[in-house]
Amino acid sequence: MDEKFFDKLIPYKTRSKVLAIAEKPKYELKNISPDKPIIFLENPSNPENIGMVLRIGAAFGAGALIVSGRNSPFSASVLRAGAGLIYAIPTFHQEFLKSDFKDRKIIVADAEGESIKKNIILKNSIIIFGTEREGVSKNLKNIADQILKLDMQINVSSLNLATSVSAFLYSGNFE
Image (tube, rainbow, N blue to C red; front, side, top):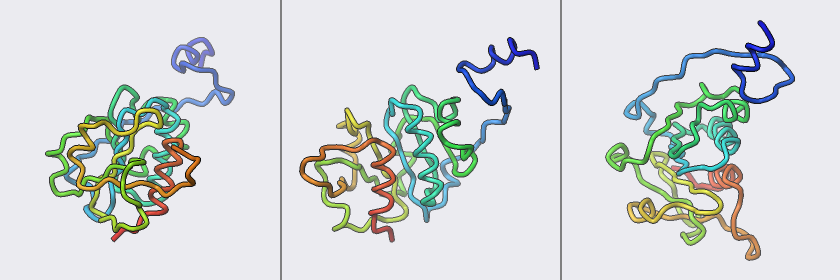
């Protein structure tokens, strides 16, 4: 392939000079396993975090990843950070609609919640994570069935988004 043409296709510098063209997967929320939690990222600002959460979700057996806001889970940065796992779990780019999840328990991860260690999390839940800076919006907190927090040392106020998702899925008592 002509190097100038390649450079037009790829918006960033790459050492490998490898290009992949793939069809965007098509999934439906109604087909997501009710025995697996769904991860919802509200307006994540860093595409690399989305890719890392995709890997984490695949590793922990999440049913799906849903991302709202301007950063698409199908962008080049996300695909690179996700290490090729875009097909590992169903992935969506959409806003949160409560009607899409009427059969699932809505859980918000928030520093002001109850301890995750003292609660049982139903596998048929959707777990909502906000950004490190903003947290989860009041609108989503208001419709949550449960708000849970990670138990951290008192001098630590927050974690990186991908780290929070990983710690939450690892610490959760899922039934």
